[in-house]
Image 1 (cartoon, helix red, strand yellow):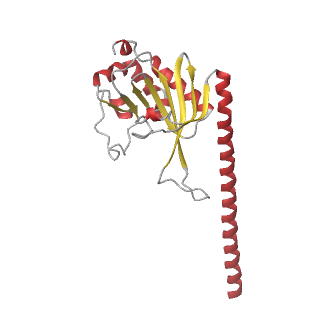
Image 2: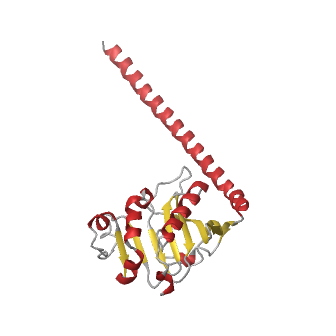
Image 3: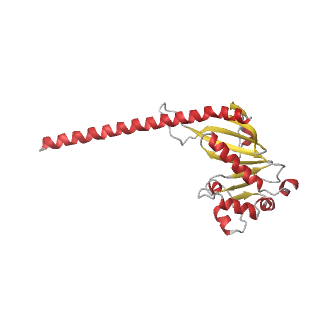
Length: 239
């Protein structure tokens, strides 16, 4: 009986080991395939830009520095590199998009023992004039207080105030942007759930965590243009 139990234990141990090995192999294959897809998407960007008459730079040192403080960008920095830096026109508006990369100390490590890079993709379109203030519209979060964010602006529209956090120093300016039509659009468009907005000077931004790819370029720029179409002209003429 004891011999049978010993055999069963050995079989169980071997089965667990084989299962772990198989799991590791499948995980490695998935990682490699994902890496190949990302590389293919990156390689396609230059061709997409050329076909649309856009400019493309695989690596643009210093180009990301001017966007410090916007969305996922650090509050300050110098000579920050913009990867896959693309500029051009989209729906009649000048735009830029790029990928910003950094090492998060809390991120996991690669097989080589290095910290994995975090990728942030940033998009912006130009406004027809200069705004008078900075405005941020995004989803409220439980970590807002932990991140040191102060009280948010409330518009007095319960449904909107519940679903969106608005930050600004100029309430008058924000109310001129977030009109009834704009609020209705943001409340009804599913993209607003995952596409934060920031209006700074004469540029409107959105962003996401992840690598840059063709599909998201179209998606994000279309969203920014849809938002810009709904900003009243007097917002720019009065600035």
